[in-house]
Figure 1 (cartoon, rainbow, N blue to C red):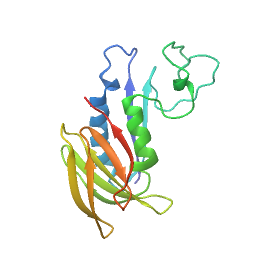
Figure 2: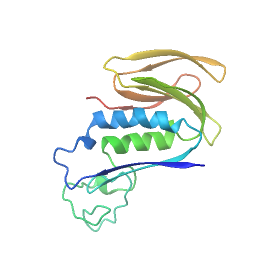
Figure 3: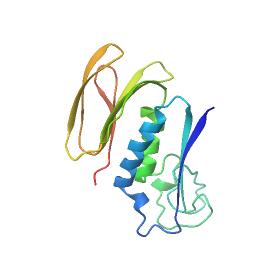
Figure 4: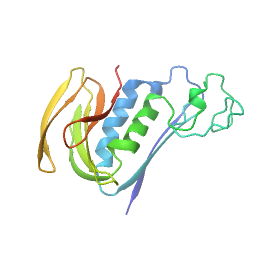
Length: 174
């Protein structure tokens, strides 16, 4: 049996919404990493309404959300195709483009730090280090027969190639 992971955040307003915080996004990143490592998980989908839908397409006819409500807070940048810029949307974008976009080769979970490796569709191996602590972390590990030393700043998710070169990072300070 295969599963689809979903996360819904349904609120009527943005005011006081904890789901729009970096802290929530990092919690989601930690928990989602632990779930995505499992071979029975097929995909993930994250959605929130009304304003901060992770995936929505703007029609440029106005500042309209996916549910059709107008919102003057939507800027030109927010009305372009792509991932929405909320913290949760940034985690979803980072994971689906890079950190969890491939077959899982290795996973080591922890309370505040995890790392994993995936083989992407183009054959490259991507190693990701998640650090949800208030201090920078340095990890020595072996992936695909190669020893690597990876560094991540506090409250960050960083992806590397197998040479230990940073590909991309997402910081979520709180």
